[in-house]
Length: 459
Image (cartoon, rainbow, N blue to C red; front, side, top):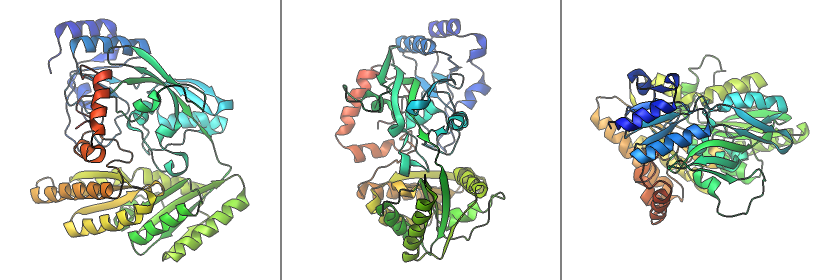
């Protein structure tokens, strides 16, 4: 779009020259995330420092009907922050302060631009950490907007489960506060969790109070490999059903293991479907007993190898490689286009989802991997195809549709943690039915002029 002259003049009076840019190079940096979705250039980028600046900016945008897209670290992979209608991108990277650490309450209050890994390094001095772990060094604002999860969701929950209170600026510039620092809350509608996962379409987060966890005293990892992904998934179901409470439980198919082995910094693993598991306890003996029970379960499901006692250094390298497995896939299939799938089902349906998805990949002739946060019923697919091969592209698209339809058939969801963004909008009506109309009414109430991250979430 072309920005109204009065709007741009007012914006330039609000921000000093070093915190507003019309440069094409800067706008291109804010035109795409890490997904394969097409980039869209914004018309202007600003870097607010305070809630008041965010409020004034939104008031101006609301009056001028200029689209506004909040921007965290740009690490999402579903097109969530792509400014599809141009307009203004609000980059929160300079609102990056830890405002208060409430050590005795296991809480922290932060601005949205704080980066997850950087924050946890500081919190470690207090023996605490923010548990949701998306892998990338995402911003807290982005994690809240997308309800990010990751490898530790199985024990600690997703971001939504660890947010106590928010400060949010509405589309017209009004500032509201939701929730409180009390862990128990029953007063009024749960507005906090309305904004979590809304992808910046209902309001813009400028402050968050998060629930923390103590860093475990004793941690150990286990690695188990299986003949098939179905065997591995069946073991997952029994591990969760046994009440063992892993802190992480990841499933990787043989292709994913082959690509993981391209990382020179980790031990070489057999290229078989594999579970990476982590368990923690305040007592070393209890941890040992848990690992022995896990060994028995895995062997009952045909495990052909089971290793424990992975050193802290090796464990850190394995998780680092797992976190960067998406980028490793992109390098491995260099020059090819890709589609990323992200679905989740009840854990009782997880073995069926894995077995049928693996069969779908083979039947439809797509090339890629199955990997995911198995402990909470979440699986990712990554399929690749040559950019000039239209038939392969159509197969990849058809596979992705079939995969999501399968997850919905199994009482699951079209997205477990990546958010709706651009790629999952077409599945929303099928998943939510008439509830979509309630979502539209909420959007209309909170953003009547449709300026907040337009083109996302709602079909």
